[in-house]
Image (cartoon, rainbow, N blue to C red; front, side):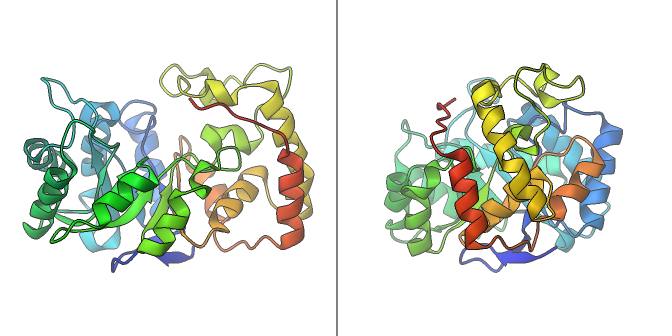
Length: 317
């Protein structure tokens, strides 16, 4: 496993990180989650990402239970706030930042999180209120650094110029071979601002593993067949996408890689990406994914990948 610095922070994160959306706290059993976390640490994965809304707190609770026995300085822990948590709790107001960080810390069984992320932009709260509140929890020692998820370049830039506040060290967009939107504006801005990307869905929710084939139903044990984990995959589950992924197979094979490893290595080719988050529902998936760390794709391979995907358009979800 290789590691990269997270923006201007002092944090060093593994190139492959462990996400918990749709999996831990509901998508898989506790035993499976524990086995995945054990395997992740054994492989050198030190970055764990979650959010208060995942399982309405269940993912944080499970991670808190499973991570508590480990030395706190042996992993980098990130969580998020914004989405509704019940009883009118939502957004990025000062009251919500203060309330939700304490609730997350209780569930995670820790005194601090390394990165506290705004899960979306809150147009109903003044930006300076949000940034002042994030600064408050950093200076109280509850959070080390702050970041965002799925903010536009303009929104990030507006926060970065505010005076006397903590500034972002990370951005968490969706980014993959099938979804390259961050390249247009977010990544160039973040390069200038010293903000790293921590990308979610680098395997397009499993489609880039090559397990789905044109004209065939999804495998019985796949995410697409799971009510708990497959509900957000619709835009990727088309024969056009499957055919494009099939065109990547020989490119991966020529490089001695699996399709998943090719997809992860492609994301990590971007220097501004600090970590690619994967959601493992079986420990062996992490063995395959972790092997993508440190893989270099030469220019000819990158050209071949672009040619294989030329003309493919995936609609926003």
